[in-house]
Length: 325
Image (cartoon, rainbow, N blue to C red; front, side, top):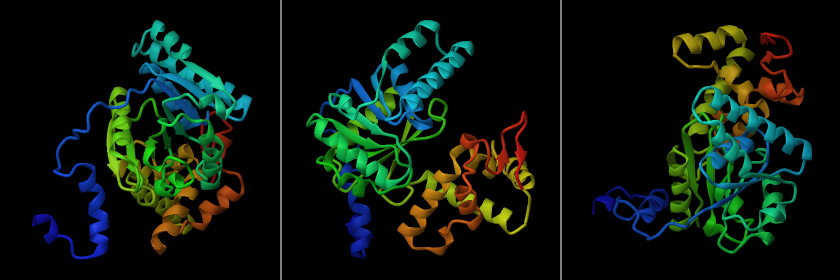
């Protein structure tokens, strides 16, 4: 009776259904033994992919790190090695633990090499066409019970799942950047994701020592639904001449106690990624408040994508970052 009292429209029911279906009485799942995941495949050796490989290998999983580019694979493995060494120097792990973690990671350039993995995490660029092409090439090589996930930070999980042969074993597995440092992982069910798949992914998050936040399949989920409009508004503040790069970032760091200013954070994330997420929000929610700032678009068109290109709202080519406006 209490449930029905709050359901006045079909949309209300649609929003509430995933919550009740996942655990009908609001308690802990009792679906039985969780799938034992031992081998994890990761598609994409960039910033997110190598970070995911780092934490997975350190937690004891055998990892296959895939990228179409041999140079990207080598660079990704070098980043993992440096980050693990940093943890050794800070006495967070031992040298032996680092060596074992590196030994668990196998770099591979062929998608079929991931076919025997228990869990695959796609961590390619935030473009839906790229992700769909990866899934279409990968799916024929997977075991029937392999769980397929995407590290997308904004794109519809249901729509991505529809391009595979296993929508019930597909879900969003969104890590935060930098992966070895950030404690949160967003878990996002698609409309067909079954309970066993969710439980298996939740168990992986627990083994990593991270915290899972469950999000429904709406554009940008939770973190980026809140974060990206703030960054976009900071870009508008710059675009309209309300403040300079330095004053905007200093205001948020000193006035709101943020560890990084919004423009500095945008450079760290990648301005192309910020723009892609704002476009997903604008297209998916059809609200003008999510319209990407023209200045953000201009920077991306110029190839000024932030730290990864050495220029964004700051110029990183010297010893000290210098604001570009």
